[in-house]
Every structure is written in C-alpha cells, then in structure tokens.
Image (tube, rainbow, N blue to C red; front, side, top):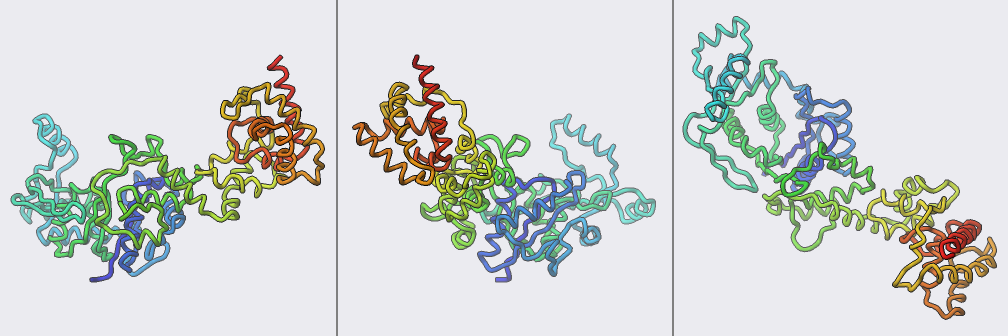
Length: 487
C-alpha cells in the first residue's frame, strides 16, 4: 500500500464551522491511523467570499485541537504551493490538456444566451442544463473564435450515453445515467478554475489517496470519476460523511446562531472535549466508551464505523463530555482555567484557588462559573422564600432562630482562628446542643451569607472565603430583613 495522504481543504470564508472541523478531524485521523501525511490546502479561488483573517482562524483552530499538518502553506512541502490562488497557471494548463484529450471543450456562449436558455428550460419544466451548443464546433470555428479573442469557458465533455459508476467507502457503488449529468464548467472566463475541477487536479498532483467530505458532494462524484478517467489518473478513495444537524430538519448554521468552534471555546468548553464530542457525531466506537483522547481516537477509529445518517448536535451531550474533561483536570490546571472566569466577578484580593477547589466537581462549562460565585464580592438582593425548605424543614421563623443562635458562636471565633475546621467544629457543637438536624442551622446560614439556593460550597467553605467580618455583616443584615418580613 502506497503512503496514505489525506487533505483538509477549507475555504477562508470566516469562522471554523463544527462540520468543517469534524471533516478535518476524520481526515487527520485516517492519515495518522495508517502512518500517512495530513495536508492542509487553502482553497481561496472564490475571492468574493474571502474573509480577511480567516486563514489565521483556520491555523489557530487546527493547532488548538492538535490537528497539526505535515504539509501546508506555512510549513511547506514537496507538493506546493498549498494555496489554490497561487496555483492558477496549473489549472489552465490541465484544462487545455483535457480539451486535447477529448474530455473537455471550449464554450463561447455568452451570458445572455445562457440566461435565455435557462429561462426557456424552466418554463418548460426542464431542469436547467447546458444544451451543448459549442460541443461539436469544428477546429476551424474554435480557432477563429480564439484568434478573435472571443471570451470562453472550458466545459467537461460528459459521455452522452451509458452510465458512470462511482465508489464511496460508506455508500458503496453509485451508478448514474450519463444523460443526467451536465457538461460542467471547469475553467471560467477569467481563467479561474471551478471548485470541482481545481479539487481533482490538486488532489492528483498532491498524491491524495483518501478524500473526506460532506455527502452533499455525492451528486458531483461521478463527474470526478470521469475527469480522473479522462486524464488517466488513479481515483482516490472517497468517504462522504453525513451532515451534522441542529435538529431533524435543519443543518447547523452560523446564520441560525449555531456555535462555531471559537464560540464554544469562548463559552468555556475545552478544545479536547469539543474534538471528542464531534468525533462521535457520525462515528460509533465499538463498545460503550465515549471519552477518547486524540491518540485514542486514532487507535480506535475505523472507517466502517462512520454512519450514513445525519448526526444531531446535542448541546447537553457536549456539556456532559466537557464536564468529564473538567473533572479529570488536575486541581492546579482547573484553577488556571477557572481563574479568568472567577475574576469576572471576584475582586483580586480573594484567593481564587480556594474557590476553584469548590467549583471543579460542580462545573460542566467554565462560563457557568461567574454566576456561581458572584455573591462572594457582594451580597445580592435575594428572595427570603429561599429560607423555606421542606426537605430541611426550615422557614423564616426557624431561620431567625438558627441565625440568632449561630451569631454569638461565630462572633466568638477570632480572625486568626477563622477557617473551615474551626467553623465546622463550633457550629456542630451548637447543632448538637440545640438537638436539631444539621440543615436547620446550616441551610439558613448558607442562604444568609450567599443569597443563593445553590452554591459551589457549603456554609463553612463560603464563610471561610468571604471572611469573618463579611460573614457577620451578612448575618446581621439577613436577620434585619427576616424581622421586617415576619413582622
């Protein structure tokens, strides 16, 4: 078996779509699975859609998830240039060569004629297709038009009869009637190649052995085969993957507000978790396991595990996988990731390491952190109904009792003694003395110093973090609020 060479060939049209990233991932995995090369090629021939900075976004995204390319625009290689707009002379040469081989022809039809043809066909209920008006021009007619400088395109000469069979690694053999295929344009009037033609030429010249792309290109696939056959080139293995859907009827789309890779990172998802999740969107590993590092994905991956059916993007599943990755981080690494989110709402003199220690097992996405700890700097206005908890058998009256009894115990603890263990021991002594359940005191205390129903830690942890003076101040304020509401 010759060296496996795969390519990811994105267009620099903006952000990195999740579907594009999945294509890159599968392409990379196949190359590495078989000890081959992963090539990055930038397809920028559609200058109208070109977005400034998009190439850097592609580089940044691939590197962030560990999909490092062996050849590409910035690292070089033996098959460059790796930017399609820098390869323009190549495509015209091959288009003319295909004309000489009988697989293509010059078309001199102007825009007005083609527009009129399309209108007539649509009015007749016929699918628009070029009528091959220039297909059988004589050599003399062609040369005269070329000598006169008449604008032209070069079209593929599709066989008029018979069938073309295309093989896909997932879908098997697909056979189409040649009569249904259009004589597609290969080289435009401005000398720029069409996407379909440039892909075939570049894939051949770069020695690409496996091509992964969306199954929306399946309809074009027979035309690729005909091009390869006309040139006498070896056809690469094709793997057409099903799309990623937002739901049963809609594809993921940035225009519909669906997240790009950068959006997900900004929301607090780990790049390793994103890659792990999108690998599962259309590929099923053997067994029940779902958490895989990139090297483990390479080892586990098999092409026959890919699905022909669309995959639905499930944000809850992504959250769950991200949570698994967060819990697997070392405490130090988690604190490093969490600090900027904590700092959004917590002043600089508060020890973020203590806060992070409480958060790690309660965080699925880092962007949830500010809302969990926004009470640390400043006590929020809160609903006193939080004291009413059936499970804890507490209400506003019991809260007044618990806080009134706890206050002198807490006031008796000095600043130097104020830590989790002392707080725990003294308050549990009070609970034992009162003869009540833990929640009777601790639920009311936690609400009084946080103003929240759910917090990343219990009353002792919170009191230690916000400090003695702030804890006592908040209890006094809460007692005043409770007294007014009960009166």
